[in-house]
Structure formats: structure tokens, C-alpha cells
Length: 335
Image 1 (cartoon, rainbow, N blue to C red):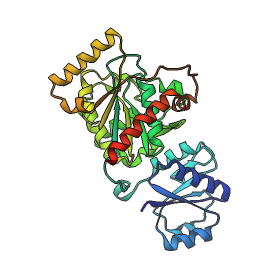
Image 2 (cartoon, one colour):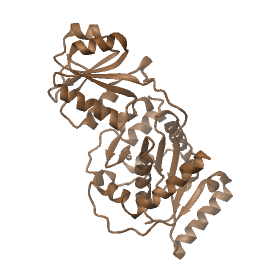
Image 3 (cartoon, rainbow, N blue to C red):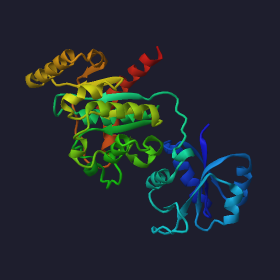
Image 4 (cartoon, rainbow, N blue to C red):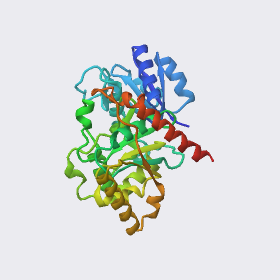
């Protein structure tokens, strides 16, 4: 059973909309419940355990003591936090950012959030030694199609992905910070919601801040990072754009349940593909070769730039192609 996050505000409509948003996005490991009054919340709290209470700065201390929420996070009226009302988040900001800040403040038992996860998530790798083969477009489309039935996260290992410019976002914490925490034994997965952004229908972790942030990290470490993310983050599907990982690609791809490899038919591209296949054979990565599916993607139509780029992919020819691909994968899982 998911833990309860209660939302109590003097504006009942605000509380209801915030709770609806939290439940609809499905990224936080709680069930959000909105309350219009302290009395209703007290009645509920007398019968249910409240893990997090989001409430306004004007909440009376007497009421809070009676509710006995495990952690209180205040909904501030001002952007500048009141030191007497911490932890707090600014209530009038974008709801997605607000929820990320809530998750960043949250500490579960023993400083770690206790999340019930049913098994390891599925890892879908997208990789090709061939350039300009629509690899990133395929990965973004896969993330959207899988999201229709599974809680899905997109992660890119490209050193220069261009996501910041494409999405128009200015990122705070990103993959660089998550990798740093992972490598230094810090708490990662229980607060992953604080790292997740949304672009259209794609939930994703912002890419590394600088290309150098991927240097010095072995393919084995990255593979372990992805494996742990699949096991501990609560996502049913992780779509990984492996990027140009060079000889590290083999180790990263070992963590994937299936690898989709877009290919082109020109002479140079075919030579690169054969060389990559030889590398897999010579390095003893037969498992990767068995999970590798070469794809000839449909030709890209005219796609406009802008914030609706993911939707254009989803409802275009590539979206239809991926739906067929994903449908076949689901059927194989059920057999």
C-alpha cells in the first residue's frame, strides 16, 4: 500500500488540483489526498497514517500536533523561505517543480524513503555505431509509447545531447549529480522524483552538465548504475539512449534487456555495423548480440522544432512503427 501525502490548504481548489497532479503523474511513491478543512484532515488522520503533510504557513501548531504527520512540508506564499517554517516549497510555482522540491525535502525512515517495488524494471537500450540514424528520435518515441502502459523514464548518456536547448529548460540537479551520489554511496533512488523533468509525454533525467562528467566512469560502473536504477527507482521501464559510448558500450548494453539498433544501408554504415558485431563476438558478449535488434526506421518526415517535438514523433510514422515494435515485445513477455 502506498503511503499517504495529505494536502491541506486554505484554498480547497488549490489543494485538490495539486493532489490530482501528484496522482496523475505517478512519479511520487505516495497517494495524494486533498482536504478542505482541518477537521476533515483530523478525522482522516485518526484512522490513517499520514507520511507527508503539505500545508500552508498559517497552519496552527495545535492542529499539526493532533494530525501527527510523519513530516510536515509547508506551502509558502513567498518565494523566499521563512526560516521558522522549514522545510517549505513555494506554492505558486510550476506543479512539477514543486513536487521535485517536496521529494528533495522528504526523508523516510532512517533518512531513506521506504518504497515498495515489485521487481526490477525493464531496461531498453538504444544504440548504434552509425551516426545520423535517428537514434535519439527512436529513444524518445519508445519512452512515450511505453509510458502508455508502464511508468517509464528516459535517460540519455550522450555527452552533448542538446536536451536543454530543445526543451527550453534550465536544469538544477541533473544526471551528473545523480551519478556523483551513486558513486559516493549517497542516497539516490528514494528521491529520484527530484531529478525528473517532463517534456511532452517524456519523463526524463536531465543529461550530464558537462561532457567531462562522463569521463573517468567505467562502462561497468554505468552498467551498475542502470541496473540499480531499474531495481530501485520504481520505474517499470527505463529507456537508455546509450550515446557514443565507444568501447564502453558493450558493458552498458549488458544491463539492457533488449537493445534496438537503428541501421542504414549505405556502404560506410554497414562497415561500422560489421565492425561492432565483430567486437561483440571477440569480447565474448554473446548475450548482447542475442538481445540486439537491428531496425530500419521509417524515413523521417518534416518535423518542426519546438516544445511539441515529442508529440510529433509519437503521432507520426515513427510512432506507428514503435507501437508495432513495443506491442510485439509485450506479447513476447506474456507468452
